[in-house]
Structure formats: C-alpha cells, structure tokens
Amino acid sequence: MTYAAGRIEEEVAYLAYHFHWGLDDILDLEHADRRAYVAQSAALVERAEGKQ
Image 1: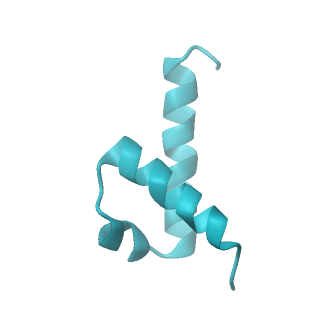
Image 2: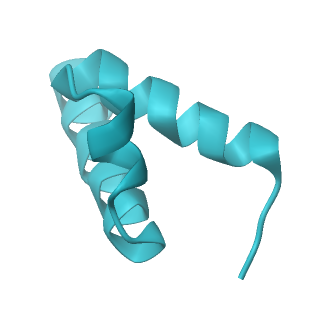
C-alpha cells in the first residue's frame, strides 16, 4: 500500500514534534502503528485545548 509522500511527511513531522522521536524511529513503525500514534496524539492535543 502506498500513499502520498506529503501524507507521510505530515505524519513524521507531527510525531517528531509531539513525541520528539527521530526520523528513523518513526519510519520504522508499521503504517497502522504510525497512524494510531498520530490519532492518539491528536486526541491528547484536542483534549488539552479543551476541544473535547
């Protein structure tokens, strides 16, 4: 399965910013795991901002 390069760059930037993980660590994740971390992090950010 492939998807747009912009999307993976978005995921990498988001996880690097929020978790302070390196590029290799993020790219070593399976796609589903990376998406799950992005979703969980987004939920935490929304909760902290009072959007939930």
